[in-house]
Image (tube, rainbow, N blue to C red):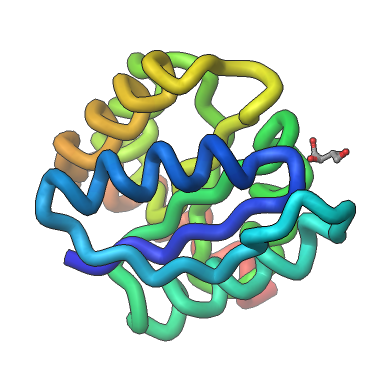
Amino acid sequence: MKIAMGNDHSAVEMKNEIKAYVEAKGYEVIDFGTNSSESCDYPVYGEKVGRAVAAGEADLGILICGTGVGISLAANKVKGVRACVCSEPYSAKLSKMHNNTNILAFGARVVGVELAKMIVDQWLEAEFEGGRHQRRVDMLMEIENR
Ligand code: RB5
């Protein structure tokens, strides 16, 4: 399974930790950067990962900025993306089971690396339940067509 990753300058170290963590679990990572601590603009990386996931180049995406907010907002502007910011594992798990999120975001200035690993684990291991949730996700995606 391929995971697209993207981050801004505030999250280079966190991205590298999480990238190594998921690679060790057998996932292939497509790293869209940034890999520099020089100040940059999170929408660039949110859009890159959003487009990679929406186009099927990657199965899922992980985005990290200071809070996870800005970079997830950018990804959510891409048609087909369902990105959410999660600062704890429960919401991450339920976001996959009920909302079929295809991008997980979190903040390098909000969560520590060990909590981030738990959030990532719960999200990657959870499966979409379908059923009544499929109808609601379909409704969400129809909003993009209006
Ligand atoms: C960068 O300073 C910061 O604004 C960014 O990482 C993020 O938190 C925005 O949502």
